[in-house]
Amino acid sequence: MLEKIFNLLADLIKSKITFLKILLRSNLFIKFPQSKVEDCIILGNGPSLKNVLANDLEYLKTHTILCVNKFPDTPAYEIVKPSYAIFISQEFWKKGTIKKHQDVRDNIVKALVNKTTWPVTLFMPIQAKKFTIFIDYIASNKNILINFFNSTPVEGSQKISHFYFRNNWGSPRPHNVLIPSILLMINSGMKSIHLLGADHSWLPLISVNDENVAMVNSVHFYDEGDTKPESMHKASRPRHLHEILEKFMLSFRAYFDLENYAKSRGTKIFNCTPNSFIDAFERKDLATLFAEKE
Image (tube, rainbow, N blue to C red; front, side):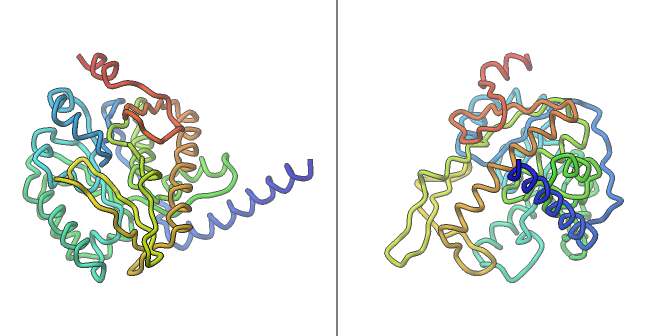
């Protein structure tokens, strides 16, 4: 009984702290246009997406798609023609990061601007809005509609958190681009969300080298050849192992928060990614998904 009371008080305190963060970081008046369709597919960057793009492009072309991060800088972008795209990492608009990462992101942004000949809604955190040169460059393509969202981390009471989510004031901790992607699609009115390329299979790929640097071999659908372990950075320094594991834990926990929120909005989330490590959403195999779209 005492533990239950303690947990309740702790959640209320977290909710109050979250509200203070919202007042400081969020735009309280953000509204999203409601989608005219009620079903979408979110394409993650996991390695399993490679097989889908090789074998099932015709199915993807006929569906409402949200793509993330590097997808515009791939040949599939102009074939699939996603309706939505999302950037969340500040390296997309903020200079001073590792040059290798900045070069990759510059190529992604250039590809988005140069390739997009159909209407695309691009979601970005509200913090990007003040980087006017970056925003103006994207807005130079009139096919791209920029929608800003609040990425303020929301924690605490489930009921209060759902109120914050519904008003677009914040998100479960956005340690992974898939987290705000799902929330944005729920709040855009989607009633059925299918996840592809959401492998999240990093845990067996973590190692620590002889210099005590924690490494992760992150494999993506767009990788060419073999990949190798690399350090994960926090600002300009490598993350320690406990920081990497904490980041992963918060991501996996966020999916349960999203599943509960989706149920409160009458939305179903299906994970259609083979061998995915995400254990929060109902599974659906690819054959079943694509049979439903025929």
